[in-house]
Length: 404
Image: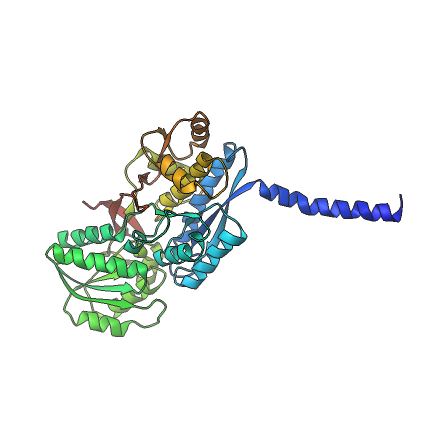
């Protein structure tokens, strides 16, 4: 063999070695996951991400997607507190990794930033398992942004009703100064007053400060015994409550879904947390919930973790939409998402991927009934939902029941 021929063969082999993995990667269908892997909700994110990966595993274990391709999940960190970080992570997923669609983001501000800066320009559908800000409803999103939790316009009404039912007629509100905090605070304050209560003070606070005593003193001067904290368990939420307890400013504490993390109990102490009143978006009592809970537990995922059912449903719905669309092309995913999530149609439950593929191939309509309930999207990409009351039992949060 000549040296020249040898060099050509070596070069060809090297090229083949490079092309082979690229070809294999081309056979994958990739969706993104955007969440605060670091920052004020970092303890809440891992089970939500694992639930999304469980949905992909269900798909891959039952034959794959659009002709047997693998469904992959690629994660990006929004930090939850930095809109620029969210935009950068979304840009990487949309423009570098070329994802077909995105699960997320989780924090409302991160969802809005990711959508405006990357997903909407890139024609990428986003389905958030956790973003609750009312601002998302009116986002000019070209029908690309959806969520599986009710808006805080509704959670604010239900938290107001719950507090008043417990005889708490005067409250002060401290909220983190972002889309989530402001939207929730405005909704709660209006609903509380409309239902006969008094809001003695409502003030924003900045995330990441070491000392909130000045803000607490201002709110306490209004005379309310109950402080509602609309912030995050791993961030300002725990600091505000801890310092309010230390200063004796308030007798009672309440909050929304951002506080529902066991790390909050550890931070402020089980005794101080035992009477904390909280709400969060919950899962409807549907067959899919039990199926998912069993699958999650078998996979080492805590089925009681906040937004974990919605994390699974977001990924499974996007997979169904891609299958319905017939390719990993971004065009048509939004239309297909509405088709696979709406009645009428053959009911598909969590994990029933093979059944769904067979129905789609047979030309049948399908209707996914998920782990967190039915997902009949309205014109704005919102869904009806339920709000549940949570309480502290020992070192963990447990569900009390649906707020009605």
